[in-house]
Picture (cartoon, rainbow, N blue to C red):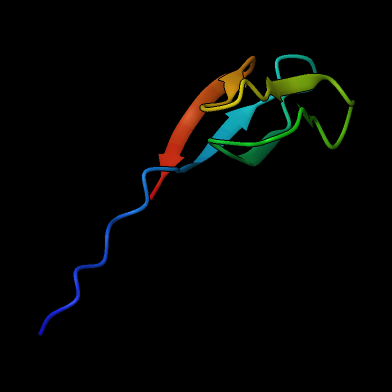
Length: 62
């Protein structure tokens, strides 16, 4: 008997803050608001599903 392991549908995303240009890795399905660690600007907001990203997406990490 073989067990099938499903691939996760959620990803981590590398974003750049539009205010201070800090690069930060965030979770694609975050349950809370994500602020920049340097200047405090809102980078992403929770929507109940996928995160609404308000910063430039540099890379989607696997």
